Image 1 (cartoon, helix red, strand yellow):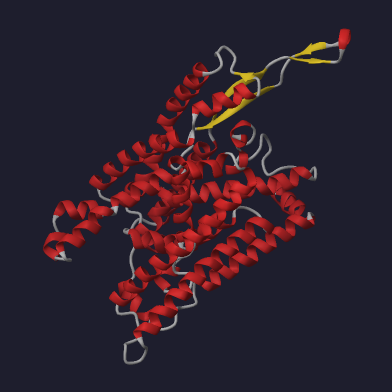
Image 2 (image 1 turned 90 degrees about the horizontal axis):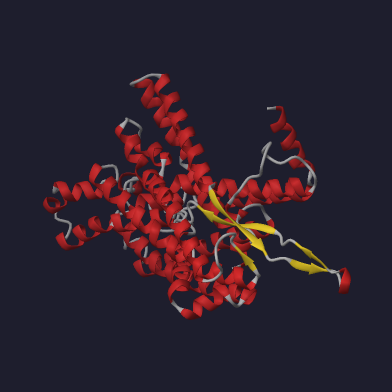
Length: 456
């Protein structure tokens, strides 16, 4: 406890770090405030009975927006259109040569072009999703009647406000990244996720007091803590492949002496794919319900069939098994797209470096590919287990609002973003010769991948 207090004092002593943290908190406060400003022409009370839960796609969006979706606020779409646009651009970078050049060969100018394209795509996606969201509000009878407000005016103003809200949230994220601490867009999502945690804890506390007593609640919190610790270990886990640079001559003429080359390593992450496999798997798991509702015309008899209900319920056994398999498959696919052994081998060759005991060229690429495949197996299994842990939590009596924090996308995002933010704070402390946040070693957030991986 004494070390924690000392660390907090050191953080406050550093003026630049203090200003960055205060600036970040201020912009996050602005974002949370906007989550409660309701769109004009919407009746918020009508959404109390029609709001989506946490078991469908709309519930997932509501989780990431911190309740703004169900509040029909100006930030109802949050930064989700920007995330969608970023994913599309990233996938295009794997398949389209033009985007490959921008990502890999054109340096800072290429990144600026990609950012501009991402922003334009965000606007296009927001216009489409904004129309879909207004349709959803209309279907929930949460819009002022036509005799009071002209429908055309409501749609025009609603789409403009939702688009402006998303762009403003994106601007807040970029300002936090530039002048604050941490990754701004990720922090906005994290704050939205954390916003639902207090109510979930209070609801679970009341439920367990009525049923199992305080001991069960403490046990649940302890299990949640252990899951978070295991997630931290996997998120930070890397397989270091040692590399050796060739000897070089130092000096001139007869005084020249051979000097051994420096040693380094290639950090291959155990979980290189991050949360993307879970996002893809969840998107596919929502398709059966969407198709069933579309082709049946909303017929209750069709939607009430057991197999459809099982697929629509993310906490069912059938849904959990399918989700687990999809995550494992997508982890291998996405890792194969991200980690290119041939690029690593070419880079080592250009830098006059090699892996000890492995010949340059194709043998090096094959070796890196084999290592990647081996470490991806435990990483994919872990991601699959993380995906279905909320189902186990519900099976043991945890309410659904708290169960989603036991695994899935929310847990991985929370852990990764917190680690990344703490790593940046630690960098400021170490730069000014203060002690870091941990006694031994150093924190490894998403920005820890430096050296070879970062230069490719």
